[in-house]
Image 1 (spheres, rainbow, N blue to C red):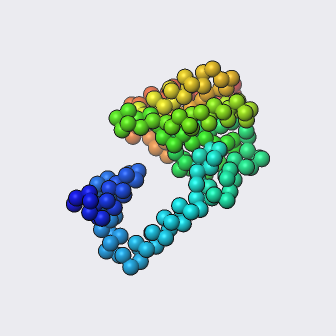
Image 2: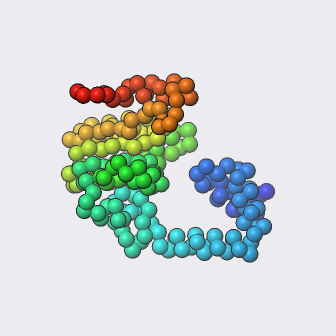
Image 3: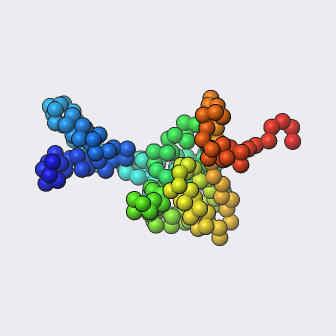
Length: 203
């Protein structure tokens, strides 16, 4: 379908969403038209409401209401300001929060280094990270990044950038998932599990 066609434009836009391929975008567009009396107007209304009321937090980059900026996590005085957890996307923040093991603050990069896709970490987010380290008394930066080539490159880049700052830079440990078995683990996962091993028993 030509890009100048309304359906073509809709499919092209849907295809830009994370995890949505060409065929999925086509099916979504067709579903919206097929159920146009209910789904389409409700989707349009929801998109308009999000546009009018939701934004990225001016500090951490997570999602928040425009009337609550900075977000609740950034404003919470009970959070440990000396620890800053760096994530790739705002969607990573609630995942870490649900784990219940981190009580510091967050900083979303809004991307990662991906030369093949012509993407990188926005300079403004790196600059904001350095500014927060200097002004908020951050002593440890935890790189909670994914486990792939692009994320590894991003972690190395950030480690170099932070080398001149008086902060400890750590990265999430990678290893065998809970409830899984060694026989199901790939060689890279096993290697990282061995490198990140921890002591057992009394020290």
